[in-house]
Image (cartoon, rainbow, N blue to C red; front, top):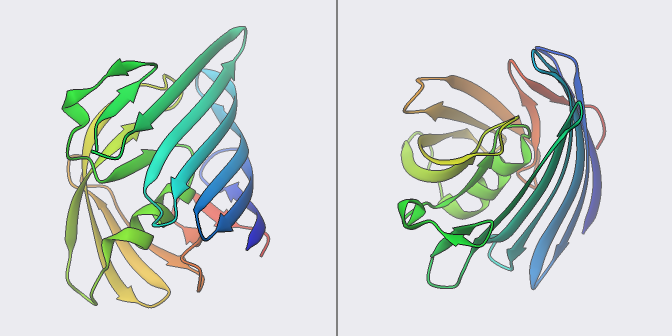
Length: 184
């Protein structure tokens, strides 16, 4: 399956174009995001590669804001050990998945792997990537399946909550107050 998706940011000026290539042996997501933040216009290119079970193996990002460029290379090996820009990150041990702040795509990674049961909240630890710094930190989150095409996301450390709709492939359609998909 190959999909082109476009999300519009609703709470501030922004747009994402994602090309998603799903194969039996793995998934590759390539994306370009434009966001207007207080710091200025952010141009973010990212790539995420997973294995056939949707487990993140690698995420790379290049972020430009004004004359500043930042790069990130996040990897997880088969034993669950994480590294950031080549340096081991033992603090990320036990993180279930990544969450890139600038995209709704990374919710799909969690949905594909959590095995949610209706109305049973499931907590998880993520390797959370902040924008515009591209810093990686541990974040505690919770997902609750509300229906086959709707789930509740809750950031346990921030108490942010959102009821998110998704399609049959578990790709986000509407993520209030931030994102709304504009193409199928």
